[in-house]
Length: 181
Image (cartoon, rainbow, N blue to C red):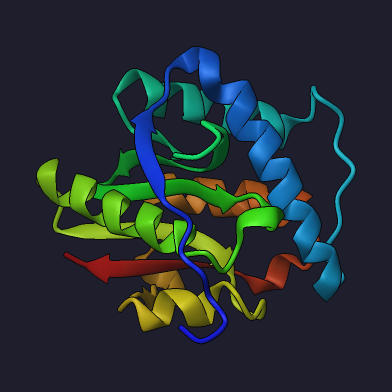
């Protein structure tokens, strides 16, 4: 892509003890959403954060928490958390530090999450996102994701969407998407 420089990264598995690092990356990445008017100020004991922490620990225990480390500095600059829902791979979260966006790291993480979902035998990969944020839905559509009609969202993903719509700003813009693998 024009304007994008590649940062060499290695992908390394995370453990349940690394979930705090994933939260640090995610918090920094979420600050970028302020550009489109989406801000939150949750305490550590917020129900949505506690649910994410439990989910990401489960991902880590199953080998689905993966970090992007810069080769030059050994610093963790991005991650994804992959689980399963209704027989599909479920991308719980993917995030890259704002200082490292547009360097190919997100693409490297997405390539690996798709490959991991395939290795695990999933025929689809699902995720939830905002439909109006420029770097969300349109990015996923370029990768081949399509919006899942509301009446076809499975119960696990629907439960997560319900939590997100309850606690996140702009709840009507939260959607689920699917990529056929």
